[in-house]
Image (cartoon, rainbow, N blue to C red; front, side, top):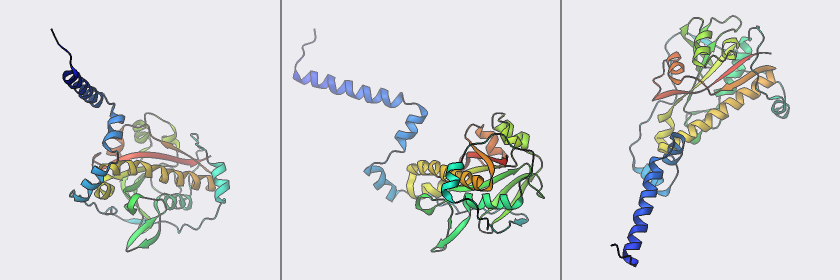
Length: 264
């Protein structure tokens, strides 16, 4: 027979509370756990100051012939009109993009707009000006440009061919057979190198990296609207296949989003 008194009732309540916390922690979905593990607390902020960080290079350089792009000088719609016209387009005409249009889109995505203490500042905001993103493009149909996978060298405003060939069906397959990725003139691949941001912000940095994909995408959207082009951001794809396409390991560097652009 159990005799209840204030002492053991209190102990039972404490034990019950511990079990609730334990069960809830182990019952989190992947998304809930990510949100929980990257939350900001004073303890995490202080711990971050004393944690040894891995510093990643600020941008990647690929060996190969760099193709300089035309200087981005286009003056199109005023911002307010571009915002009004911004839409997601999934059907594209079978007409090639002009190299000048590609140049303008790449500049809008991650072009250099200035420097501070030697750090090249870009067209999109970035937590701590750490810029975790590398921009790759799959060229399907661009005038006077060979089909293939290219890397954007933002310092030179140039592109470097890293894989030559027709990858339109490869990217469509990786994008769960979404046909606009095959039909687009070009598909932007936004890949993040997490350690650039984690070096300062720890695990919280993952949130900032994902936020930044939205900044880049919106710049592409607005530039496409100004150029009279169609575009759509795509988040549904097979991560391993998309990472393989740009030769990323999926851990240190991983594809976060892709964006198709084409004539309409």
